[in-house]
Every structure is written in C-alpha cells, then in structure tokens.
Length: 333
Image 1 (cartoon, rainbow, N blue to C red):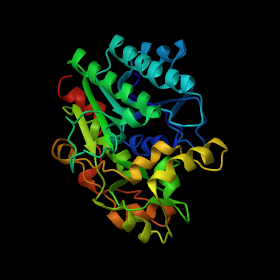
Image 2 (cartoon, rainbow, N blue to C red):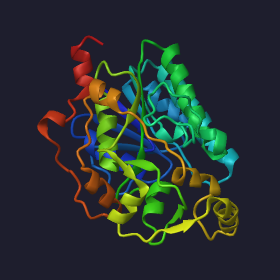
Image 3 (tube, one colour):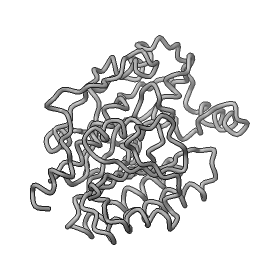
Image 4 (tube, helix red, strand yellow):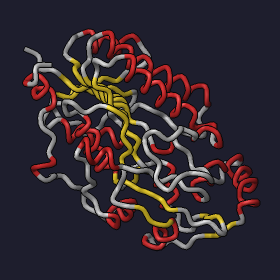
C-alpha cells in the first residue's frame, strides 16, 4: 500500500531543500522542480518537470497526494516579465486546480510580507487584513500579489480544503540568494540619507519550520511569519560590519536605474523603497494558531547571512512536526 504524500513544488531551491530534509523525517515527500536536487535524501521522490505541463497532473492523478506546499515562485528583475508571469501565475493556478480536482486536503502557499509594500503611510505593524499594495510602487512584484490573491480566492472557494498562506518577512541565511541577502552581503551598501527604517528578518530554517507547522490538521488561513524581532537598518548593517554609503534619495533612483540598466547593480530602483519606508508586520496570529516561534535569535538571524551560525539540524521535541498525514487520518479526514 502506497503511503499518502506531501507534494512540494520548487523543492530544488535552497528553501525547498531545507524543507525536504525536515519533512522527510516524518512524511513521504514528493518533489517537483525544473532544476536538479543534488544530494537529495534517498527516500525523496523528485520529478524534474514544469508545474504548468500535463505531466504534473499525473502526480495528482495517482491519488496519494494529500497535502501540497507550493513555493515554485520566480522573482528575478532581469528575467522577461512575461515568462515570470506565466510560470508564477499560470503555474500556481495549475497546481491549485489539480489539488481541487483530485481531492487534496491541505494546501500551503508560500507568499511574502513584501506583498504589503513599503509605503510612507504604513502602520507600524501590518496585520493579515492590511491591503496588498506592493505592486503600486514596484510593478515587478505584481505576480506575487496576484498569486497571493488567487490563493485567497481558492481558500474561500474550497472551504473543504485546509488552505494556509504564509507571508514571511525578509528571508535570510547562508544559502539564500534573494534581494535582501544580496544587499546585506555588500561591503559598502547604499542607504538613503535621512532614512533608517525598521526591518524584520527571518532565518531560512525558521521559514521551513513554519511551513512544516502549517501542515498540521486544523491549520488554515493567512499568516504573517516574523523572525525574532525588528531593529533599524543601521543596526543590522553595524552588526554585519558594513560601511554604508548614504545617498540622497532624489539622486539614488535615477543613478541606480542607470547602473541596473548597464548591469553594474543587481537591484532596480524600486527596491530602494525598502531602504526608505516601513513594512513591518504583526506575527501574533502565526504564534497563536500554528505555535510558531523562531528558533534563531535576532543576532543569529542577522549573522546567518554570513554563514557563521550553525544550522539547527535538531529541533526541540515539542517543536518537531508530527507525521501530518497519518495524524489527519486519525482525526477522520
């Protein structure tokens, strides 16, 4: 008899590999990605395919997929926007449609707190009910906002499915290759003169733990996922030993646009909003409903960017995810 499985899209990414190594201890894991997964655990079933293709539906048709964690989202300002839109939005719709068609009981979608957008009028701590304004000043994030909103529609359209959406703050860590980590690895990063916004960071392993906790029976809804605290950007750079370069914001944007155009910078000018405006969120709901608390301290999270903090290979017994699918059957699902 084939055991029920958790399907993870985007499993070959850095976060996906960490999640797979956590989940496979308690559950059968099936992974989907266009990229290879070097060093995958022997009991991991990995399929190299595009989630938009019909072959992806064959995995659901087998009938053993009872939970899905979807995090196959691409965000690269240098890639053609039409290609990204197709993969992100069309791919998400395909995965969720297959899940509904073949009776998947649990769906977890990884979004981001950046969907709220750094805005001059933001509250100090945004809740899950705050509007998603991220694409107003940064069109390149429109795909992520659209994916987030489509997943919310799925949640209300299919109340029989336990749907969870996670919106983590900036993810950092030794293997992460996103905008926040790349910025913090610069020896002389730009800052905007006169601005020092509060920022929130979370370690990649803590995000993997939050995803695992989301699989527990009964968990459903939208959750902001926060790290161990918040502090001014200047304090983060000081902890990392960086020497920032203050640039007047009126000059910074056109200058960065030119540098990005000629591939002399890795960030488009819209990213400067994160250095100017506030976008901090309230993670109370995830702590209350999911029992999520970050395992890494604030200093460990920051210094994890440099790879100086050892991984939390073993988690505390009370935080270890129970076998999700067998627990679901015990509850009569």
